[in-house]
Amino acid sequence: MSNVAEKSTVQSTNFGENEIVEQIYDAVIEQQLRPGTKLSESSLCEAFGVGRMRIRSALLLLASRNIVDLQSNRGAYISTPTLEQARQVFEARRAIEPNICRLAVERATEKHIACLEDHLENERNAQEKGDRRQAIRLSGRFHVMLAEIAVNHVMKRMVKELVTRTSLIIGMFGAPGTANCHEDEHSLLLQAFKERRQDEAAELMITHLNHIEMQIDLTSDRREGVDLVKLFKN
Amino acid sequence: MSNVAEKSTVQSTNFGENEIVEQIYDAVIEQQLRPGTKLSESSLCEAFGVGRMRIRSALLLLASRNIVDLQSNRGAYISTPTLEQARQVFEARRAIEPNICRLAVERATEKHIACLEDHLENERNAQEKGDRRQAIRLSGRFHVMLAEIAVNHVMKRMVKELVTRTSLIIGMFGAPGTANCHEDEHSLLLQAFKERRQDEAAELMITHLNHIEMQIDLTSDRREGVDLVKLFKN
DNA sequence: GTTAACAAGATTGTCAACAATTAATTATTC
DNA sequence: GAATAATTAATTGTTGACAATCTTGTTAAC
Image (cartoon, rainbow over all chains, first blue to last red; front, side, top):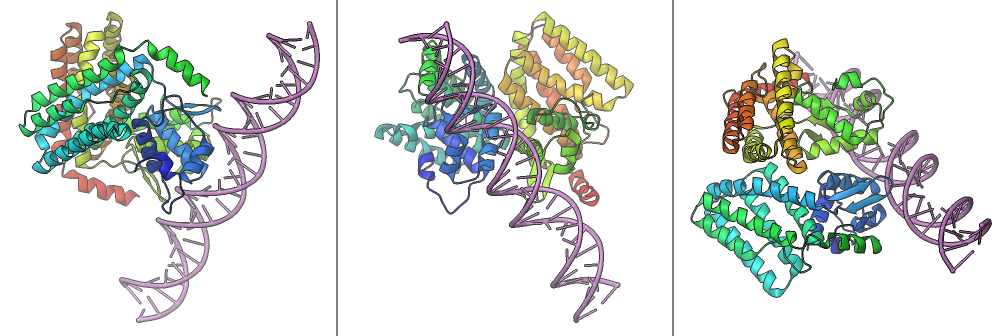
């Protein structure tokens, strides 16, 4: 549904910068756009059926979020985060997301909790069906949903950026088949939501984020190899 | 030094989008650009001595950070935050900055602490000399410095955005003469730094942020009035 | 005298052509 | 045959002109 290729057919609705940015965000989260991939302006123009100006604006916005690397006179590439950047991303997530959890637990209505339950159901289904793209996307979306429940646009934007960058980090350093999140840890979090335990939810989030980060620390030396492969297929 | 007017003289160095964005950031922090001010493209072109493209890119970036409000076919205006947005900004600051404090205390070298001491000296001087612009700028800069000491680019960007938006919020809801920060609270924080007390520093930051927010809560009803004034001089 | 319609001016949005830089290919030399 | 130099192709960066939209000021009608 939110797939770049599918949207490449010219549609009746015109894309604004924000829609283009969102689409690329999604493609990065789903790991369809991997680190190092070149995003040439002409391709994107064709893909989205818009002029070059829109594309350039979108790329600028993505670059300001560290999703895209703009090299002057050379073009735009999906960012290839370094280990240091990965460290900073996880540090930021640990700083922010536990507090989002607390706020979300505080403000979640019954409806919200039902919504989260639905979402976890979908996550499980995608995982069982082996729909990897969908599974990754939904597991990322879970974190953004918490910021929505906390009713904080600023933090929601931050989390969105951080989740997307995490996908890039896993694409760089993670084992090939690893998902972004363990869905069972999301379940534990939801349990804490139901029982309205703020501190427990915050703690669960921290350990959850630590588990995600641990996936990449083990394979940290793979970086150089990935970098070379990336250079070749360019 | 970092004044829009002064830079309006055409210089030898050409401005990139980022420099323009930074300059406008600073002008907003210093409350030289107040909420609702129109930023017409032609004026900015003249001011920075660059083409319209650069200006439009800069405005787009500022809009993506909620510093500027882009209205299609009507132009760019310095954002006029609502009370709800103000609430979210402070909530985000309380979520992030205490953790930055902890990290900064952990990682601050003696040199860093000396640097902070210097900075506080400058803050005091500006305050005593009655240089309000400088005082506001430095008090905002203090918070960004902590993120620098914590060595986290992501968080530094976030704080910069939040500090700038805080300046807008105070411009909207604060009493006319109020500064963004009480410099004495910054001193208390530095004391905690010297004694390497993470938790105390984090606590001090929370109360510090609460004090800043309290400045605006008392005058919350002024908003409508401000809005009207803004409409008048528009 | 007030309101509504209309026209002039100014500002923003978009596009296409051109310039500049980089990457790739070919030619040349040792 | 390998390495370097030069030319060609492709992509990005920039500029200027034009179109669309909104604001402002004027005129006319009620």
